[in-house]
Length: 298
Image (cartoon, rainbow, N blue to C red):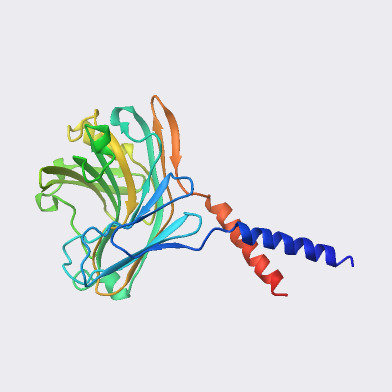
């Protein structure tokens, strides 16, 4: 009889835990679509804006919005970006005037799974990057729409297949190189036009792949302002992290976790836009799930 009560207690606990577990992973396999996190500070976006009939992309987000992955295959036109699956950060401090920013930390861990020849070859293998993507504009409302903003700032932390940033053919922009932590970044700049819109893009490209990083973005933003490439009066409105997918004849999977943005305003305080649950909490819940599975199988 004494053994029954502990068993019933454990059974009730596991049943209660099972009822509280969120739905399985959310997946989007269409060119457009998005998945918001429970706290609405993150939104995961498919953004296969240049999809082709021969290719595909699926983006999946885990139950707690602590990780996402994108599996894709674009077997034609290795020089064109076909999609940018990414997580968009939505702190309430955005949009924020650049001169009002006192600190910005960009954090993420990532990996890419692909056939070995695709990772090693610059000629026949895949072409993709891993990058932060930010937009700014004189108009705070336009700054919050990547299709409307006049300025784009990218931070490339990974490259496969030798993709080229906008303006690469012109060489380094104002001979700018900056070292942040242990990583050296080179600056490229260029412009693109679509209809009546002219977009100026500044790309900081890491000299080697950085799979885990906590980037002090002010060290990359300040040179743009100091060299009159960006006006300090512009508003920063969009911050995203993901992978630009150019080309792959076989399936490629981009995986990201531990992503977050910590933003501090000189006048409005600090805010973090990060995981729905911290990773320690997630691992603890996973341990409980395994223990309950073992217990219920007895």
